Length: 149
Image 1 (spheres, helix red, strand yellow):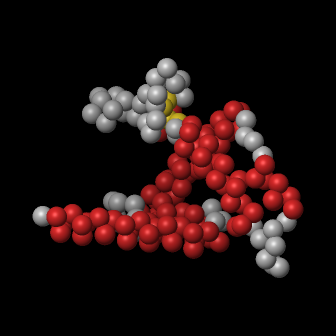
Image 2: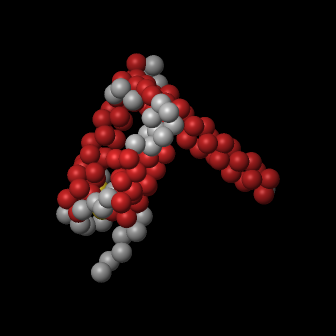
């Protein structure tokens, strides 16, 4: 069969058109690569006990058992659809904050405001940390590129 590693795939199973295609890509008809989504779900199950410790610093027994769970095909499809909807909604909200600021480019802060709007304020440190790490990596790559010239 055809391997679609790292490429977006339409719900009907066909590959999304390349960027230079005349047909626009409609976001809701795209799916994340199944292998990457499965990896994210498994990672979340494996790391949930560490991120959900109670006030005493212990992991509840029911969360320890999460690591032993399997995820079926129907559940992965539900995660895929939920992920698409979530990204579209966060993007819509972030775009609204961008427009309110009379800018034309969505910034990381706009995404953080959108997540706060959705009641995910407690996750700010996680998102801010990832955003800062991305900025550092980007700056480092740029410095390496400048030094090479």
